[in-house]
Length: 170
Image (tube, rainbow, N blue to C red):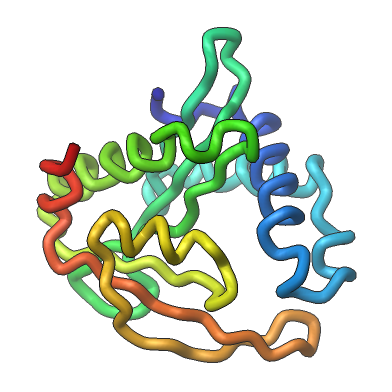
């Protein structure tokens, strides 16, 4: 696991697109999924990594430096003085192998050094990742509605009241 660098942008884009198409297949409009392209996301990630201040990211790679998964985080988009987990994406073959847990621990270490104590994540209500977040100690906080290409979806907000619990878990 290492801090994200521009050289991983293509691999991260592949993970984002592939996992997004798999995860959101039944939830979001097909047109949204069909518009997810590797080159589009690679360019987005390159731009994001160049704006280093706004986002911190880590990538998990195998021994051949192929991207297994990544996570990104930043300032909380809902409340002040908290931080937010924006994304954890894993290649399907690497799910269930504790990579997500390692990524979230790394994230909380970064936030702890920045003196953040609480963290949230926003997830589409139908996303199975909710179980992962609950397993790491997140509690349901609130919900809201969003529209993706005219389809109204519910988004759940989960909160960790003390990120040290994640850092200290096994």
